[in-house]
Amino acid sequence: MTTFALVGAGSGLGLASARRFGAAGHEVALLSRSPEHLDRLVADLTADGVRARGYTADVLDPATLTTALTNAAEELGPVEILQFSPVPHADFMKPVLDTTATGLDDPLAFSVKAPVTCVHAVLPGMRALGRGTLLFVNGGSAVRPHPERAGTSIAFAAESAYAAMLHEALAPENIHAAQLIVPGAIRPDSEHSSPTALAERLYALHTHRDGFRHYAEPMPAA
Image (cartoon, rainbow, N blue to C red; front, side, top):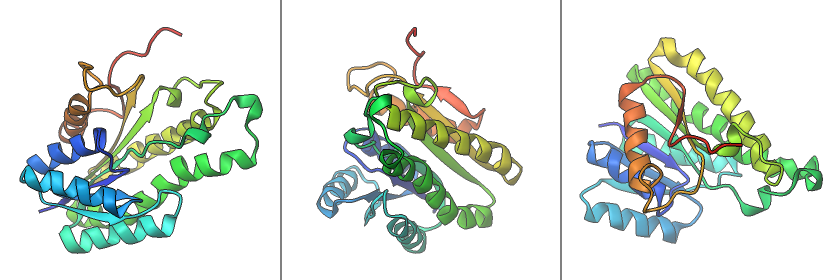
């Protein structure tokens, strides 16, 4: 069986995605900074009958990402699906006039260098399988820059460009790159942007493989 690897494992969207892909029969590799947090998530998934294992990694430390994804592939099976959806740090969201060049180091490492690292870690396994899916989840600032959230607006735009280029470059190899934009907050009571609804949408992006950019719901009027 192949592996669904989740970078940015959390108790909301991350857990819902792990449940959805695990229910489809994939092994689940969860990546997060906190071993205790991973243990709780693995216990929840195991109780649901999902085969899951946690791997400690920091999105701002590329070496830990590579090690975690390599170990997951060796222990669980090749990574067929990678979901990159860590939640950006609050201090990335400063007003544009308060954002310095140095202040962009971590947002760009988080949203550009980290996904590049992850893709390079899983791509050999996907090529060996002859198939794969790369899923990128971003907020609305990825397509509509927000002057009060400059760090994420700039970094998400760069991540979007990278993912769009992957979509074109990897399509001939049967590796599908797709982006899901979530314009507002992820809320349990939302029809389209609840963790469960988004997880189902991400699974559909993996199975249907139709186009690059998708929206959980329409962007609000500017």
